[in-house]
Amino acid sequence: MKEKGVIVALDVGTGRVGVAASDSLHIIANPVTVIPRDGNEFEAIEKLVKSYNAKAVIVGLPKTLKGDVGPQAEKVLTFVNVLKGHLSDVEIILWDERFTSVIAHKTYKLLGVRSKKERATKDAAEALLILQSYLNYGGRKKKLEN
Image (cartoon, rainbow, N blue to C red; front, side, top):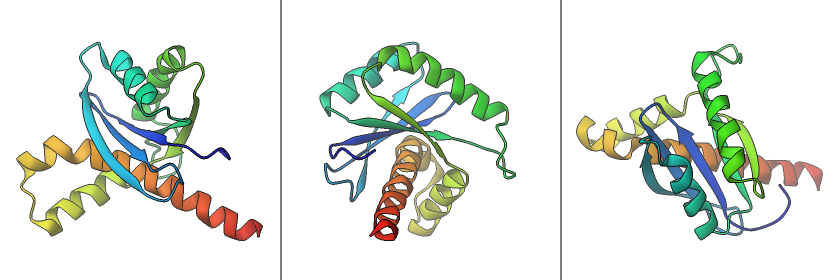
């Protein structure tokens, strides 16, 4: 993605979708919200993406440790196919999200956040990790090109 502007990231879970957004210069990611998977999630995501005037949506793809597409990744791909119908004018990019759950959990543990509080915010934190890794990759790629 070459065009500057906000990028939104999604961490798609079975019960919730974590959301994060970048700044317009693609430097830093911030957690935004958690959207429940209650049948209205696609409309909520569409509204949120439009409110940010997002140029792209990054969706975490939970590959297996071997890098394969497993059952959970298949569920995310099905989700993305429906999402494309709601966001036909926005680029959707799949991003390998291996280890984001582990990193988020360990970070919360280090900070002393209890599991009840963690459950309430971890999906947005995981979306933040997905997006920040995407942004970092873009920055490294630019440095290598120069």
